[in-house]
Length: 247
Image (cartoon, rainbow, N blue to C red; front, side):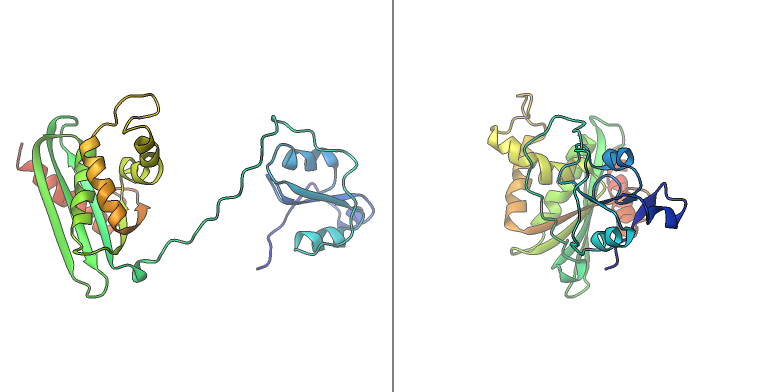
């Protein structure tokens, strides 16, 4: 793949052939720079920064494109702008499994007409990938919260498969997605308490969801609500319809 380069403050190509050129391969902005202060801004305090100086623009461009040509390090060491910290291993970003390789693709949503303690509803639209069969689940409650309805929708959805399955779960709730993917491990280590020592809200639902999540191989997707995503909009309508039964 050809690398896209950003060249800063260069007005005359012949000029940079006669001057020292600084190349930044990993930094805030990657590309060629004709003076050290501009280069330093891109690398000082940046974890894992990679930069080199060259007397030839061709060599600098070749190095940026991946060729490790002979070079000299810049004469000016980059002064850290922040206190150095121990480098952490880079997290490996695994590609998400596409919907076509899932067993089920599920959209969920929750609604509360007067949050909290107002009438609410939840809904899940479940598509079995192998057959294309679509199942809609929905239910309401006379007094609840929006977050409880979001969790209830996900619980009903993950109860649906009769055996462990690969599932893509789409939600417009950051509370649901972050709770499962970011917060739950810490809650469990602390005995279902938050970082401030307070009990986790909706603990009964989170514990049930945790057991179901552990049973399946779930890929979470967050989608913005009310922007025309068809099955998300369908869930929203079903959840609100259930809530309206208790007005």
